[in-house]
Length: 83
Image 1 (cartoon, one colour):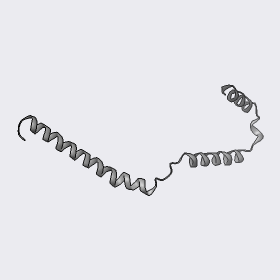
Image 2 (cartoon, helix red, strand yellow; image 1 turned 60 degrees about the horizontal axis):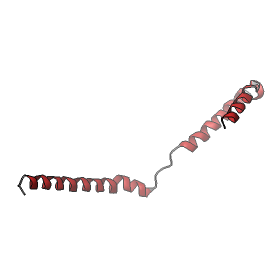
Image 3 (cartoon, one colour; image 1 turned 30 degrees about the horizontal axis):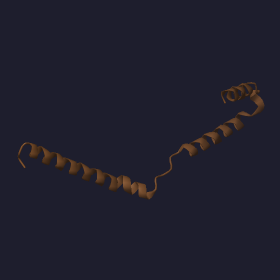
Image 4 (cartoon, helix red, strand yellow; image 1 turned 90 degrees about the horizontal axis):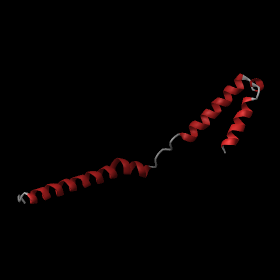
Protein backbone atom coordinates (compact mmCIF):
# COMPACT_ATOMS: atom_id res chain seq x y z
CA UNK A 1 0.00 0.00 0.00
CA UNK A 2 2.80 2.39 0.81
CA UNK A 3 4.40 1.82 -2.60
CA UNK A 4 1.17 2.74 -4.40
CA UNK A 5 0.90 5.97 -2.41
CA UNK A 6 4.47 6.86 -3.29
CA UNK A 7 3.91 6.17 -6.98
CA UNK A 8 0.74 8.27 -7.00
CA UNK A 9 2.47 11.15 -5.25
CA UNK A 10 5.40 10.96 -7.64
CA UNK A 11 3.03 10.97 -10.61
CA UNK A 12 1.20 14.00 -9.28
CA UNK A 13 4.44 15.89 -8.84
CA UNK A 14 5.23 15.48 -12.55
CA UNK A 15 1.94 17.02 -13.73
CA UNK A 16 2.25 20.49 -15.17
CA UNK A 17 0.64 23.11 -12.89
CA UNK A 18 -1.19 24.92 -15.72
CA UNK A 19 -3.54 22.00 -16.50
CA UNK A 20 -6.22 23.59 -14.32
CA UNK A 21 -6.97 27.30 -14.09
CA UNK A 22 -6.55 28.99 -10.72
CA UNK A 23 -10.29 29.71 -10.48
CA UNK A 24 -11.15 26.08 -11.26
CA UNK A 25 -8.59 24.85 -8.73
CA UNK A 26 -10.11 27.13 -6.08
CA UNK A 27 -13.64 25.87 -6.83
CA UNK A 28 -12.46 22.25 -6.63
CA UNK A 29 -10.63 22.93 -3.37
CA UNK A 30 -13.75 24.55 -1.87
CA UNK A 31 -15.91 21.60 -2.96
CA UNK A 32 -13.45 19.15 -1.43
CA UNK A 33 -13.33 21.05 1.84
CA UNK A 34 -17.13 21.25 1.90
CA UNK A 35 -17.43 17.47 1.40
CA UNK A 36 -14.83 16.75 4.05
CA UNK A 37 -16.59 19.01 6.56
CA UNK A 38 -19.90 17.29 5.82
CA UNK A 39 -18.43 13.84 6.41
CA UNK A 40 -16.65 14.69 9.64
CA UNK A 41 -19.38 16.84 11.19
CA UNK A 42 -20.99 15.08 14.16
CA UNK A 43 -24.57 14.00 13.68
CA UNK A 44 -27.05 15.40 16.18
CA UNK A 45 -27.95 12.99 18.95
CA UNK A 46 -31.42 11.44 18.87
CA UNK A 47 -33.99 12.83 21.31
CA UNK A 48 -33.82 9.71 23.50
CA UNK A 49 -30.07 10.19 23.97
CA UNK A 50 -30.59 13.83 24.93
CA UNK A 51 -33.22 12.88 27.52
CA UNK A 52 -30.90 10.22 28.93
CA UNK A 53 -27.92 12.58 29.09
CA UNK A 54 -29.81 15.48 30.64
CA UNK A 55 -32.22 13.83 33.09
CA UNK A 56 -32.09 10.08 33.60
CA UNK A 57 -28.30 9.68 33.69
CA UNK A 58 -27.62 12.41 36.25
CA UNK A 59 -30.59 11.26 38.37
CA UNK A 60 -29.26 7.70 38.49
CA UNK A 61 -25.74 8.87 39.28
CA UNK A 62 -27.06 11.17 42.01
CA UNK A 63 -29.15 8.38 43.52
CA UNK A 64 -26.19 5.99 43.40
CA UNK A 65 -24.00 8.59 45.10
CA UNK A 66 -26.60 9.23 47.81
CA UNK A 67 -26.99 5.50 48.50
CA UNK A 68 -23.22 5.06 48.64
CA UNK A 69 -22.90 7.97 51.05
CA UNK A 70 -25.63 6.63 53.35
CA UNK A 71 -24.09 3.14 53.38
CA UNK A 72 -20.66 4.62 54.10
CA UNK A 73 -21.98 6.67 57.04
CA UNK A 74 -23.95 3.71 58.42
CA UNK A 75 -20.88 1.47 58.16
CA UNK A 76 -18.69 4.06 59.89
CA UNK A 77 -21.31 4.55 62.61
CA UNK A 78 -21.55 0.76 63.13
CA UNK A 79 -17.77 0.53 63.35
CA UNK A 80 -17.66 3.16 66.07
CA UNK A 81 -20.65 1.68 67.86
CA UNK A 82 -22.92 4.68 67.22
CA UNK A 83 -25.58 2.78 65.38
